Image (cartoon, rainbow, N blue to C red):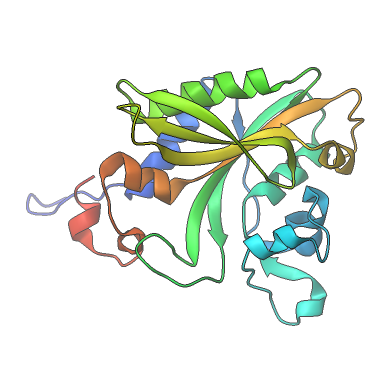
Length: 234
């Protein structure tokens, strides 16, 4: 390489995914990947979001033509969790990083394509306490420094109970960073297990949003427009 040539380096989202994989890897989580083109069954039905369920309005879906074929661009990485769970015997811990797609207006905090990381742990006697310990460890490792963490009740159709996690450095200004919960018994059944014998927890977070919060990036679109003035800072 000539002296005046600059070395390439990883995009901040790629760097962040590697960092997140390291943190969860230290807790025993494997990494799974899957196709970005999904079926309606795996993207919705097996996750306790059947046809005409009001929760489907939360995802503005890109359907592939013809729509009645049931193919779509995945709206979250949860389908990979389902495919992994159906192919493996518990106990298992897995995280799923990847690109997702939603048909929504683009602005400084929303993009039609973005990255998520979701996690799933299935075993006997898994509880909300296990989830709390894992996520507290993750956010403190990822953001660093003195950090307060709080858990709030929320709703997601594939978990019960559902929670959201907020972080704060001063105890006054709280920022939501991810959602999670105990895997719904219906989902446990859908992956071929007995919910009376097995339980688990799941969580999901927007990687783009985490990068914005950690590094003070104020426009998510800057991750995708190829502007090296942003990328070269990392």
